[in-house]
Image (cartoon, rainbow, N blue to C red):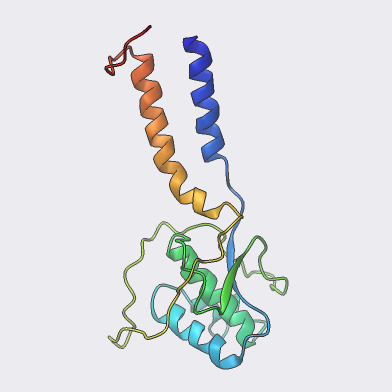
Length: 175
């Protein structure tokens, strides 16, 4: 019985930790240039690393506002650890399982959360932006929100398995 329960807990642990699909944050098609520029300004003024979309950067081409917006919001989203709501930009962006189709050689889009934690949303000029990510982040149904929760479950179940395997009394009576 103990072996069966141990295997069951191990399978549950593996099921919670194997979700590894790439998630990108991209600007929506059909959005006006003003809104796209606001998204770029906010993302680049806070968390995003926008050096790759500057002149001669590896992601500068194609040189259009939509492509630069894609880079900026995705960089922000990854540095914000893919937190729910960090890929919305007042309806300008949404999550996607695929990178943009117009990438040039040498431009590599990050698809997983950065190890750098968010540092706040104060712009480089010292002001607080009036525009920013809001909403659900487009997560319903794609499993992205479970990526944030799974480390907690992993730790809990690992602890239970360890305690159970080491015969530590947890206050439960065997019947």
